[in-house]
Length: 122
Image 1 (spheres, one colour):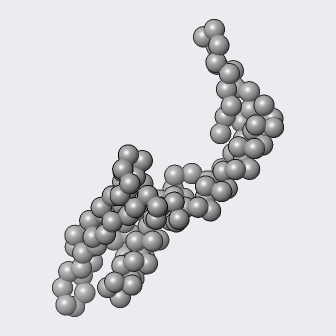
Image 2 (cartoon, rainbow, N blue to C red; image 1 turned 45 degrees about the vertical axis):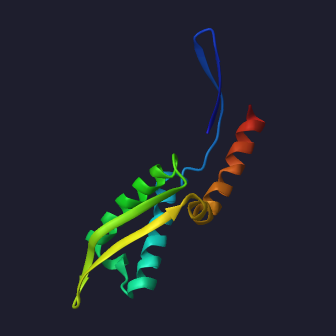
């Protein structure tokens, strides 16, 4: 995070602080893990070892995260996410902003210290 002062066409960085291990991927990973867990509960299949399915889940997680910035619920629909002896399996569920907030609460809390440090430095 950066605190800047803008005036007379000049941008002055007053203070900078952050957690280099905290970013969008962390939020995507929380959603991805939630989808893996939900699918395993519903279908009894663990997608975490299926590279193709995992890539599709990660892409869907990022899309869902972005979607929740403008709506309170988003649908995640991944047809043919995997196949078992009985046939293909599909992933179709909704993710609410409330659930997203619950999943990522610890990541959001981690932003507090860098914000406070930058404010002190400024």
